[in-house]
Length: 240
Ligand code: PGA
Image (cartoon, rainbow, N blue to C red; front, top):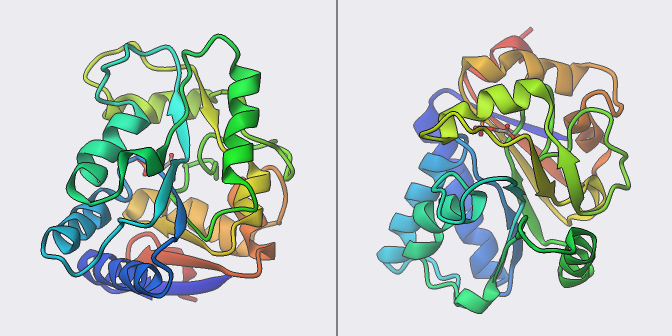
């Protein structure tokens, strides 16, 4: 795992966006998997600006949503799909047919998840990931198998609690659909992103702790092309 630590959040954002623009220039057909959550918000804002000013294009790329919350109203703004649209996709020139997302309301979730894995095909070129306070990736909670497929999962209590900031109501989702660790580990390139002091502990565990299913993010240390981007606060415990 390559470790990239930045003195400021703005330097962290600028580096991720500059590399992201570079990947799109080199491979306009880039197949990406993207998370919602608080972590990438300002990165998406900067990429939206880049698209609006014409210095990057998504017109031949494809985007897969990393996960989706279940049990919410169709128009809940906290859904991953809506968050990605609002924060990034509405501002870029990605054709709507190139945006793939998980629908937790389908009658046959098993089949839907299998179809999603089929659409992912031979894997992502680039995957951006946030990290949960318990090391989860997407909704792959601790204990998830490293070869897990896209599937329905139950969220851990801490994940439910910390999701409160995404919603304007108290009906917090208890489950969701997520891309599995198999596709995460098979992605050609993975960028694990973390900012803010709250992530310092789990980042230290991820970099220095045991590699295993109790911290899904630790499995990325075995990935041949994974970079961890942290700002000074999230990387504060990595200094010595
Ligand atoms: P966050 O969530 O980006 O809102 O911190 C990350 C996660 O829980 O995966």
